[in-house]
Image (cartoon, rainbow over all chains, first blue to last red; front, side):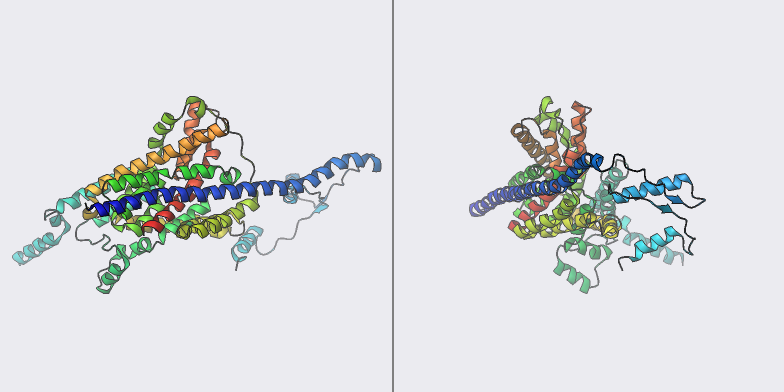
Length: 132
Length: 393
């Protein structure tokens, strides 16, 4: 092989190796730095959001006895006849999940007259047509 | 009348593929058909990356059936245009355009992005370092390929096998050395299937029992906002720094954004299922069809197979050794076994880390910790591909 060509290939070879390793490590180290800082910012942000809520929760039991010695028991929701208790429990659980810990009260559960299209079919149509 | 019928039958037999086996060099097609059967066996019976191995092997079979003209007949777009003008471009030639124009691999990357949870990597960004370390196999194999006489562009294509990422290997090779595409794709997917065989001995050789037994502490929860911002930030940072990596990284991150945004669920499902499956079929069969006897049955293929193994081994060793460094710097909080997952091969390489960790300590669960380097390896191999394309194209 031509020694000149060999020299060029060798130079290119070392260029590929050194540049490759340096660039790959630089890019990924840059990402380490960015997401490390990002994590710190996010923890601080979410920490600030949580702190006032936690403070409110801790303060609430102390303040409560001064105002009222005992909170009145919540009234049971008015439930239409014919709805089984299991369905009431399932609806209550679904509402609790959707509220995500926020205070809520279920005042009544009533059976609606059945529409021409079943609820699941309506949900399917909504899901498929919403983006358009 | 009988003589006429006999002449017609003889004529048909002479022009059939069977007769071509007895022509000069015809035995090579038979050998290639045997190899295609072997790869079909590996894919179907042994479960070697079947989703790609089966289409590739069947493409190989079609390409080597004499007379069917089902092999890819060109290496670059101008050649295809000539074929097309002459009316000689076949089905596979047209399908292969998606590989040659660099369309299929980025689409598959988009699907991978839509299936990948980058949460473990966001929770522990240090995992990026292990993903980078496991790319060392690519660059050290480049030396071996050059010393074995391959041209720089060919050496780069062979070296990328060390990234353990099929679409990346195909993308780089289609740009740098399309003549080697079949051999490199077959080697890359074969070794990816062999990750559970190749990696464990290297992992055990480079680590002590004490290191392998390290139980890592739980990862923090990652918020939805972080998961949404991750693909956007990575795309901007990487593409601005290395534009040639933008296609792969951009599509990977686009797929991930569809998954994480929460408002494009239907697109995400399409990208990670139907769309990706369609492209996988087209990619597999057209890559397989490049493995004609002339391009596959030569010494270069054997060298590629050998170098591919070296690339995988060095990549694994690089990841484990950097894992050991992290073990030292964190005073024993990082299990070095997760370093081997830095070669992409998602999620196989992470599963190997988990399995090896549990060999030493059955109550140790390294899987989520190993997923960090594993998905980082996908980004790392795309960046490495960008470097090779920038320098060698």
